[in-house]
Image (tube, rainbow, N blue to C red; front, side, top):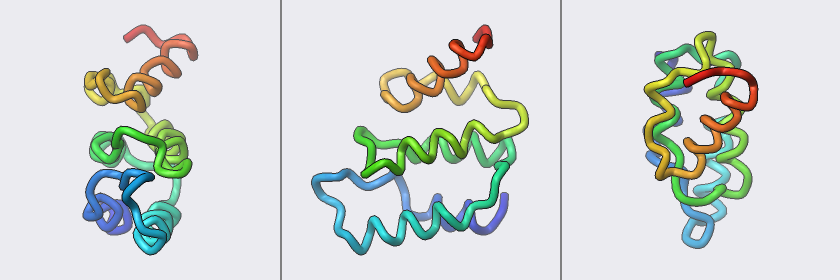
Length: 101
């Protein structure tokens, strides 16, 4: 796994909009932007764990797009936690694209 992905993962789940500081959001965004596309399948598997319960000022949506660059996407094991709205949306996007999961 590349160092920039590890650095992003070290921050833990995306911060919640109602409790994140501007400084933290800037740091998350900076580390996110350092990740070059495409991500590997292993990186995509790890990045799915970063979703929280809100959109983190658009970062969750951007993270979805990044994950979808993995060469074997959609990866079924990444789409199991349907209690998380972002994982559920990733699954729906895959299904709408014609994948049978």
